[in-house]
Amino acid sequence: MKTKGAVKKNIGPGILMNLSRLAMGMALLLSGCTPVKAPIVAETPPALVRLSPSAYPALADDLNYEGLNRCIQMSLSYLRKLPRDRAFVFGTDSYTAAHLSRSLEVFQEFIQTGHSVDRISEMVKKDFLVYRAAGVSEKVLFTGYYEPVLKGSLTETPLYRYPLYSRPDDLVTVDLSAFSAKYAGETITGRYTGQTLVPYYDRKSIETREFFKGQALAWVGDPVDLFFLHIQGSGKILLDQGKTLNVHYHATNGHPYRSIGKVLIDQGKIPKSEISMQAIRAYLKSHPEEQESILSANPSYVFFKTEADGPLGNLNVPLTPGRSIAVDKKIFPPAALMYIQTQKPVMTESGQLGAWEAFGRFALNQDTGGAITGPGRADVFWGNGPYAELAAGHLQHRGEMYFLILKPKALP
Image (cartoon, rainbow, N blue to C red; front, side, top):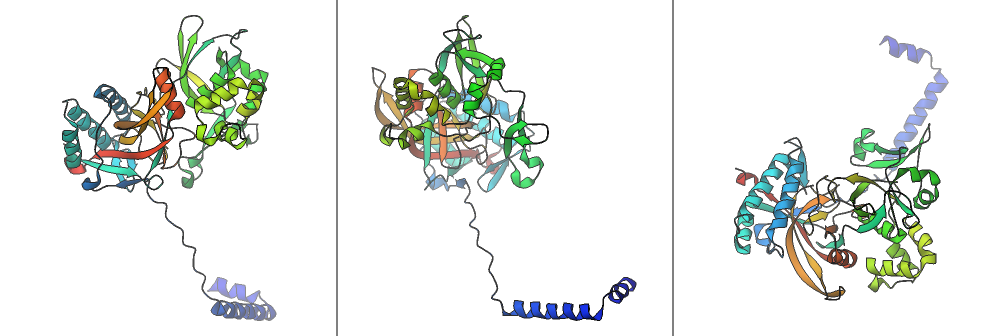
């Protein structure tokens, strides 16, 4: 009470009267206002929706299970390094790393006995939960990627003049979740100038700055081939010394990826109905005077590292052709068992694109990509070689994507 009286003593009567009038005015104003309703914010639907067993897909697989066994083993090698209680989100549900590992082990043990499609489908209905990717109207756009194989050298030569760079020392990546929980999973990339972080150099600046040449891991002979190596994220360099160098994505310059395919469509140089990696490559090869401006339209730039094995996905395990899938790592559980249904190309005897045929197969979430964002995108890894390049270059088809996990009650 002493403090309250001291305050009142220092306020003159005129001031008190004005404060009283102000309070009365505010009360009248508020009493005459229509209450303002808070805006309704629509909740983001879950990326995965749990299905009833009657809605499970038929689980036919167009490949043999040798590659699937290897792919499952790669996911298990990743999961076994994690804390057993690490949480993995499936839509509105959550499971531990131990639960996910046991799911893969049970499924692997079952398929190794050589059961038919019907028996596998029965086992999944009995013991597994299946989640469908929400996508766009329950559909997912599938594209593909592959492992390019380029010829090159460890040193610059008249034949090999285009460098693959390692991560520069002044490239800084900041984990924003350290500043606020609302930025969980978000990072920002730039370079530190001594007082602040600024955007890193874009593609054109990197390719024209001499000091980057000290960062070269290897040199190749064609800028278009190098550009597509950037897009794929990993590849092999057949060195003129007779060795093979496995190069793998290490970091980007932080600039957003821009599709040069869309640039060529927008400029009327390739019809949208004909766009493919092969069509883009053919245009660039036949218009060398336009290469620099078209390639520079994508400001994103990839820095590489060498690996003893490869190619590696974002789980740092080797990818399996046809079985490893890249999806948005922010919304889908890594290393998880999947089932996909879409289309694949048939290659003619002359190596050209023929018909398309529907297929389904089991796969695993083992990679991600800068252009693979949201619940409606997935990228299939096809391996290397002519068919892999054909499939990666032409696949742009919609389909269905599912995630599978052992029912809690079915855990041994």
